[in-house]
Structure formats: structure tokens, C-alpha cells
Amino acid sequence: MSNRLERLMYIDRLIRAPGGTTTDRLIEVCEVSRRSIEDDLRFMRDRMRAPLIYDRSANRYRYTNPDFRLPALDLDDDDLMALLVGAEIIARTGGSAVAAPYRAALSKITDRAVEPSEPGIRQELVGIWIGGNQGPPAPAGLFRDLNAAILDRAIVHLTYRAASTDAITERPVEPYGLYLHGDTWYLIAFCRLRQDWRYFHLARIQTWQVQAERYDWQPDFDISVFLHRTFSLEQTSETFEAVIRFLPPSSRYVRERLWHPQQTLTVAPDGSVTLTLPGSGQGELVRWVLGYGPDAEVLAPDSLRSAVQDHLHEAMARYR
Image (cartoon, rainbow, N blue to C red; front, side, top):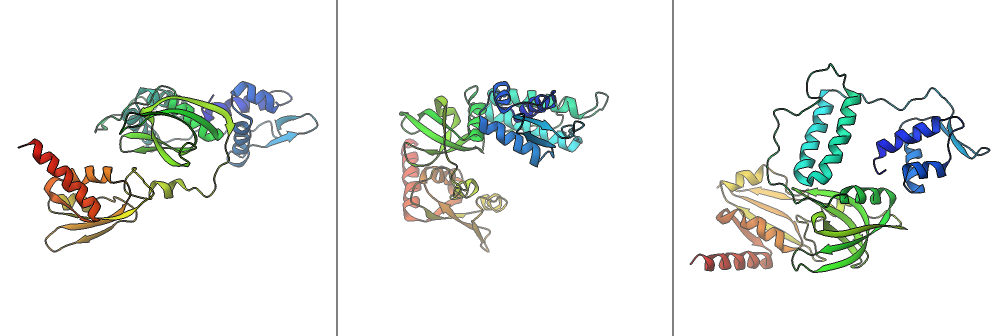
């Protein structure tokens, strides 16, 4: 079982049984690795304050205080509203393969957290709508398996389809995180084939298999630094500083947003703004700039400016 909350409930039950329980029994019942069980037991001790000890003479885990109970859920309407909004966002971006188990878990939480007679938002979310395009759905079971592999630090063997060429490659990866960018989910992983960090679009993963092999976590890798290295997900070994001028009325919209933590924004007397931010691969930046039509002009670097000009010339040729 990949759901930690469910696992903790089973672990608690087994430890509470007369005589306690063994690690092997926990692995058998929960159907996860020894490392996952050890992480769960550590979580119970450190975060849930469980009076848990390992009785070496009996080779079993048990509670020193039999009256201990797992902390009850104490959620108010704001907490439940946040969970329900999250469920709608996940349904919009991840499809039914992700949303269905999330909603099932949410139902269990609300059943435990809210009294049956309590009015309000227990059963449905009223008055909030999640708009925008729906992201491409991930294959059924993929989200769950990748999340479990991240927790277990397990190698995953992927068959992956490239967006630009449709080429299919097989590659073992070390999964580190799942990332929602816009309406699309990505796996952040170290690719052993390319020997570099990569984003993998979940909807382009054709097949996957979680391996028994475990990898060593790289302590010098910081996901937040990796995510904010440049403006776009398209990343190459070469980075540059993109400088783009926006004219009114688009400039007002650009000023309202934080596009990158390292951006600088200069406002001119005529209402235009000049946005400077780090870039890498040009494809995503070019498409973003073109989306503003005549209100956006690339000032630097020359290579990015030329790429936008080439796209505009091709578009003009089609409308002649």
C-alpha cells in the first residue's frame, strides 16, 4: 500500500496487538520495502510522539504506553475548504487516474474529521470553479507508483516518448519529485542514460517499472534551486539573460506577476516595462513572447531576438 496514512493505521494496529509485531510482519502486511517501514516508524516516533520501542529480547516493536492513540484529525472549515480546492485542482491537472484516489482519501478524512450533523462543505465544494485547460492525463497508476518510488528511493525504468521527435527511448531514472507546472505534471529525476537531471512529462511516459534497486540520495541536489534555475522547463547546459520589453496594455499584466525569483522589472515613463530574467532553452521563451503579439519585443540576447523574428516571418508568410 503506497498511501502512508493507511500504512500508519495498519502499523499502529499490528503494534497494538498482544506481544507487538516484527519488521518482517509489517513489510508483509504493508507490501512495501524495509526502508519504507523504517521511515514510517521513525515518523511515528518523531512526528506523532508514539511511545514506540524495539524490544530486542523479543525481536518486536511495541508501545510502552498501551493507552497511546494516533493523533485524531482536527480540521475546521478552512482546512476542509483547502483540501477540497486541492482535489479540484488535481482533478483538473492530473485526470481521473490521480483525482479518483485523492478524492477517495479525502472522503475518508472528511468522514473522520467532521460530525455527520455538521453543515457546510463536507460533501461538496460550492461556489468555486477551476478554469483553464485540462492537462493531459497521466496513465493510470503512474502517479501512485512514482510517488512510492520517490519515497523508497527506487530506480524506475521508463519508456519515454520525446515531444519534438516522437522518438522512443528506454532509460533508468532516479526519481526525486513530482512537479505541477501550469496544468501539466512532470517527474524530476536523474537520468542515468543522459547522466543529467531531467523533467519527464508524465503523459509521455509509455511504460514504467519500479525496480528493486535503490539509489543513494544526492544531498547536494536542491529541487527548489533546480526548478528556479531558469524561466522555462526547457533547459540546456547554456544559460543566458533574457531582456524583454512589454508595451501597454500588456505591460500592466506583466507587472502584476512574479515570473521568476531572480527577475528585475524596470518601468518606463511611457508605461512600458522591461523584464530581465534567466533563460536556457529558447523554445518555451519564444512561444511565451509570441503570445503577447506586438506588445512584446526581445532586446537581448540576439539569438533569442532572431528566433522570435524567424517565427514571425514564417507566420507572415502563411497569411500572405
